[in-house]
Each structure stands twice: as C-alpha cells, then as structure tokens.
Amino acid sequence: MAKKAPDQPAVVSEESVLPKTDTENVKLESEVEESKEVELNKPEEATPPPPPVIEKDPKKPPYTTEEKIVTFLKSRNTGSYIPINDFLKSLFPLAKINEPKAWQTQHTMKTLKNTLEEMVKSGQIAIEGNTHQRLSKFYYPDSTTGITHYYNLDTLIIKAKLA
Image 1 (cartoon, rainbow, N blue to C red):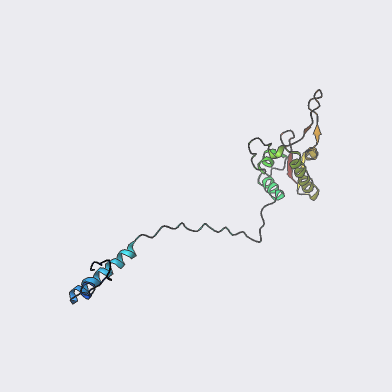
Image 2: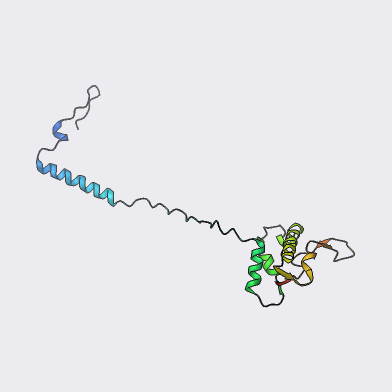
C-alpha cells in the first residue's frame, strides 16, 4: 500500500491487490487452502466431558434405616442374637471437630429407640432383653457428683436377630 500523507487519502493501486497472472492465482489459491488446512488441524481447546448423570430409579427409593438394619441382619443370619452396636454407629455421619458423636446425643438415641421399637412391634427383628428401650434414658454413674448421663450405643450392648 502507498503511504498516506497527512492531508491526502490513501490510494491503493489495483496492481498491489490483484495478481497479474494465472500462476499467481494458483499460488494464492494454494495458500488459502493451506491456511484452511492449518485452521482445521489446530487442536481445539479441550473441553471437559460433562459430568455423568446419575439417574435415580423412581421405583426404588433410598434405603431407610429399617431396611439397612434388616439387610445387615440377613447377611449375618445365624439364628442367634448378634451385637449390632457397631453397625448402628456406622449409620450416623462422622462428628466434626469439638462436636459430640451423633450416637452419643440424647435426641438421636430417642429416634433410634423409636425406630427399633417399631421394628420389634412389626415383627421384623427381635432384640434380646429389650435393651433398646433404655436408649436415651438417664442414669447416674457417680453418686457423689450427681452428673446425669444418658444411655447410648457406647454404654449399652444391643443384640438382635431376625424375627
């Protein structure tokens, strides 16, 4: 292109824009094709694959606590009573720092006691000595201080079997 003077508009000559011969046309076409090939061969930005879609079966809701307990007892069905304390503890989430474990709180033990009581009444399981009924009840381990403690999965041994 011609240089532009400050007062005059730029003038573009046709000679600088258009090729003069057919060989130059062929050269320009091959250059255009090569640039297209280069553009096609450029690695595209890697996009991460979409996260997998987890489809929930509408027929099968998540397992309830009762179903988990029955499944556990079925897997260890010996016909005799087995301790289920450790299994019941595994149903609760891990405690955060400076918080009590879930199976040590009175509210959680009341809920668990009611769940076990319903299972016994419906005939799904049998619990030895009805020890589950003492969950969340208070006791005084030290008579001198009078500090109230509550029965939980650490202080009671609950043995169960399929009914």
